[in-house]
Length: 224
Image (cartoon, rainbow, N blue to C red):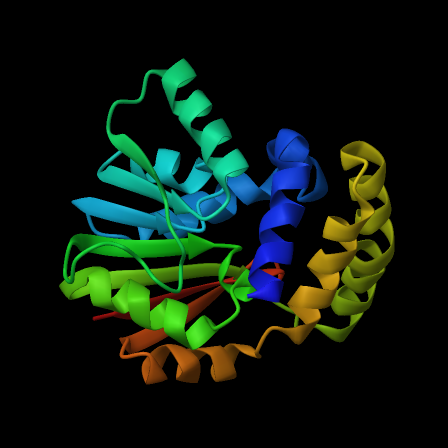
């Protein structure tokens, strides 16, 4: 509970500059990563878990009805403002805990979480919940940071990720903790094959993964 509340407060604190920093610190690649991940979802009703300000839900709304779910009220308020300004009618914003989703079994055609699964207290429980609320043969998609496999690129990336990114994030957001937390949480995230096994343990089948941008991020796709 302590980790969950500290994470909630951290994201509430950086919410006003969250979108700008995502685009800046990823050099704009975050848009491509989200598009790729969403392309792995079926059409229908899609649940975006740990939705933040709703960028994944907005991407999914191009072909589906989306539900943006997050436990941070400040983030969801920004999500609601964004979809209102853009006149998007097929997104609902719902405050929800990823580890205890309030939705009924087999409600959605697909569920996705982008850059949020590493922040939950119990990843296996959150994955199990995503699997529970997805219909039979529905898809579960995870987009998450990963560690590049090429040794040279990894050394360059680590310098940026551990040294430069936290400094820029702290200066712009005026909140140093969140952008120190980001690299440390990625370093602690399971290796690709370990995370695949965790998804399988949560009841998700036929899990595949795709490395993007030299392995900076990985998209995991499984079936209920």
